[in-house]
Length: 151
Image (cartoon, rainbow, N blue to C red; front, side, top):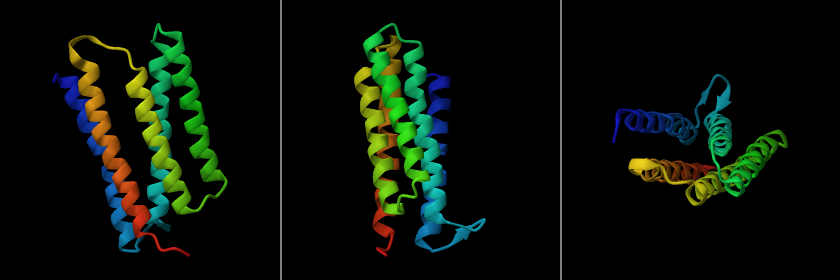
């Protein structure tokens, strides 16, 4: 793994820390800046989910394969607009967690299926890291979902 890949991996794992911190706030029923842990978790998740969907758009720009590019651009837009719309529509916390979890998985699946090979195994190492980080984020969403009280 080269230095750039190490840096990408470090940033990916660092990006999980707000999920962990806000999950802990939620479980302890604490707030931060007047927002509950689950509210901050969901807002951060919407931002990260839109960012991850946006990476599909970025990959499509540099792809020579038009059919893969179209799938990535459409998926990117549907996911970003979907999670933003869910937030604006005032979906309940549990509904947002389900929507976000599904969108993370869809983004990963589309990226894995429609990513073109790059030299020196870069795609394989990136996709492996991406799959593991996405799985951890998915599990954290499941933990928060399970910790919420039904009201």
